Each structure stands twice: as C-alpha cells, then as structure tokens.
Image (cartoon, rainbow, N blue to C red):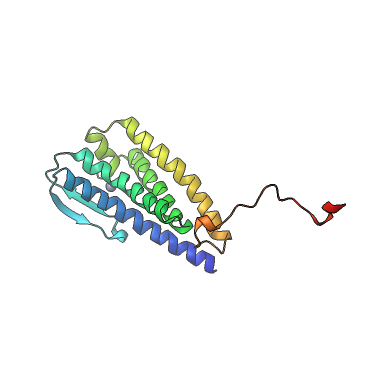
Length: 176
Ligand SMILES: [Zn+2]
C-alpha cells in the first residue's frame, strides 16, 4: 500500500516538474529572443501555456520548452544521483517526447509541434528529439518503476546500492 502511495506521489511530482520546467523553458527562450510575453499560465492542473506577441525568434521560444523540460530534470538527477530524482527525470523525458510526438500526430495548431513546423523547424530535428527522449525515457522510467515498486531502499543514493558480485556463487558444499 505504502509503495503505491509513494508511486502515485512521485508521479504527481513528475507531472508538476515536467509542466513547470517545460513552460519555464519557453519563458526563458522567449526572454532570450526578445519576445513579449502576453499571457502565461503555469498552474500544472491547467495544462500550462504561454503566448508571445511579437516573437522575433519563435524557434528559440518553442524549442526552449521541450529542451529545458528534459535538460533541467536530467541535470538534477546527474548532480544529486538519487533514484527517485532519476524517476522524475525519466518521467519528464518520456512525457516531453510523447507530448511532441502526439502534437505532431494530432496537428492541433495550438500545440508545440505544429507551431514548431510553422516556424520552420526541420522535421528531422523533431523526429530526433522524439526518438531520443522517448527511447531513453521509456527504458529508464520502466526500470525506475520496477525499482520503486520492489525496493524499500528507493530513497537511498544510487551509489550505495552495490550490484551483487556475479563471481560470488559460493555454496556451503564448495569445500568438498
Ligand atoms: Zn510547450
């Protein structure tokens, strides 16, 4: 029971981290490119969004969301080296990649992917982004999920969990 509550809590942390880092990425990109922010909603339960008018470098504003949305959580995971932070980072990888991929498939003009294509983004760059984030995010998140649901030592440092020595196959009858 406790494991499932912890799992649900971490999913919530993952969702809030993903939406806030992604949207803050757009805001930082827009600010760097000299765009004027007209409207922003960062509340994670509203599907966050931000609008800029004018936006001199829309590709910078648009790419900054999905890029910082994965770079910031991954950077935190690499610095703090905790399994639960890797869980959040891998969730962000998978969620950003899935969002960009479904935006492409749905074609909804308010989503990032059609806006990226309209702004002149190279389709191969979007494909590359989706392949890397979904590929690494899926396998990382799946292994973190299994660890989360089976291990009690989940909140310990990843460095303290030593892999079992594969040569250690000694049995009590070895002395015979
Ligand atoms: Zn976005």
